[in-house]
Length: 451
Ligand code: TRP
Image 1 (cartoon, rainbow, N blue to C red):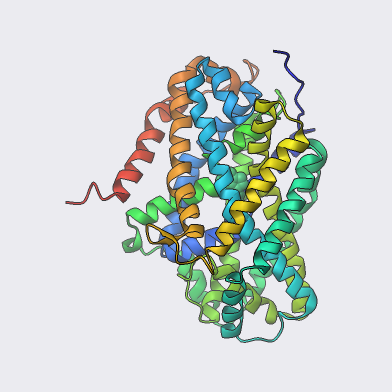
Image 2 (image 1 turned 90 degrees about the vertical axis):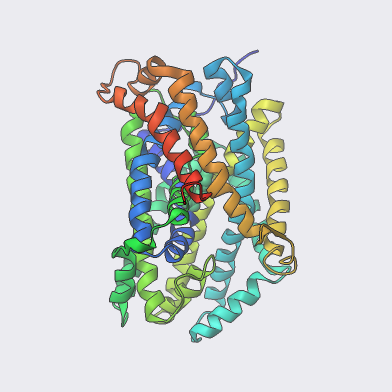
């Protein structure tokens, strides 16, 4: 079979920005605050940081390593590196997980478009907290409007995916990420100046250790994987476009640090405002969307701030959803030998369909539940708390036991040109520590350790 030449990212900066583009998204600004709010604030933050450093960072190195060494899509990467088709299952799971994530993620991305529209039309101004909350609840349960925005979002994603890796993904990340960062900083400052801000800051930063329980730990691990785009072959796919000269370890470190910084800044932006406006921190997926308009309403030129912020948030969501889409598209095109245009079209159409179901499950179809959750919440739960930890577990087992010491050292050390002193410790981590930690966190949640 003739190998087709694959595209690559243009530069080191391009590699980091594209990966940060994938990692930084709604996971940091929408999902992190509501998970932290439900998980007790500071207690959640501490466990989250431990998960990011202890599991997320080494796992990102591992996904980068698998991706670059194989140079192929998520599914075939595992076969290529092991010589056995059975290992494809890890990549196949990643493809399925990515599709489910696209389903609910694009719905939330659609909500950001509605807010852009409202900022422009002026309807975000001068309302009470109760009014924002009631109107938002009504909007997300509407059977038509949110789906329309979601489909528009998927169409934009589709256009970028079809225009290719370098032009589409790399170029858009270079400008958007720094802009998002700056506006986030400005909003943090505004939020910290609100009356009663200290209480929110204390909630986020002061850990109440009695709040740490098994489900907080599982949520924090799930959030760490979700935010870093790990456990569903996304970083494997991106790394297959990396150049052979890049230092995978420092790249993984930069991406992890930047992603975590954005999550913490989002917390600093949201919680002072949550407490200042008397919103419940445990509100769940709507938390950010009912808190932010209150902050904007307090600012001079609030509509303009809201507009810029939601445009950037939508763009951050776009660079993330592109990475999810790319996992599936790369697989479909290389596996079924279709053109990028056709492969991407199939992915976009399936994504839209699933997103419509997720959106309807917040309104008209809210009666259909899985384990007591509507389909939107169930998809989020299934991916972040089951499929992604399982994917991460299998990636560690694969790298530690199947690829083995030599191949791992060779790839992370760029074939002998970089030194990797901690390889022994790293292999021990892959073979034992990470898989055991993930399993223990699971069993703990299932209640197996309670007497
Ligand atoms: N990490 C992204 C965010 O925080 C979402 C995302 C993109 C993702 N690609 C992923 C999540 C792959 C899990 C797996 O918004």
